[in-house]
Image (cartoon, rainbow, N blue to C red; front, side, top):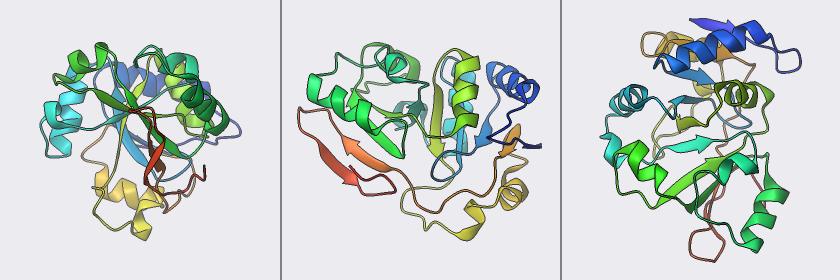
Length: 203
C-alpha cells in the first residue's frame, strides 16, 4: 500500500493507521533526511524477525539501528553518555547521522543477541519523527539495500520503491523524492569520535 504524506502538512489519521500497523508487527518503508529506509516496531519481536528474514540474516546477527524522537529517548537504550559525546549528539541531531553508542542491557534482549553497540538516528524528517512519537518507542531501521550495493535512482522515487517492495511490506510512505546519499556513520563507543562512513552529514 502506497500512502502519500506531506511533511509540511501531516495527516494524523494516516500516522495513526501506520502506527497501528507497526504495533501489529508490520514492516513499513518511509522517508528520512537521506535515503528511504525500512523498519518496524522495536518492541515487536515478530516484526524484528520478519525484518531480519527480509534482509536474509538472523536477528541475532543483525546490525539494525534505531530511530529515536529525541536525545532523551536515546538515553533509555544506551549506557551513560560522556559529556563530549552528548555535546556532539546535541549539536548534530536531528540530522543525517548514525551514531554508534554502547548499548545497555535492553538491546541484547530485544535482538536475541550479545550486541554491545547500537546505531542511533534522529533524522531531520517530520514524518518519521511523528511516527516514532505516536509509537511511543523507537523504530528499528535499516536501508532498503545492503551497504555494498550501489545507490541507484529508483531508491529515491517512492513509486519505483512501491513497485519493487509492495509485496514485502505493509505500507510505503510517499514523502517526496529521497536522496541518494546515506547518513554519516560515527563511532562513539570507545571514548573517541571516529567517522566510519562519510555520508550526507558533516561533523
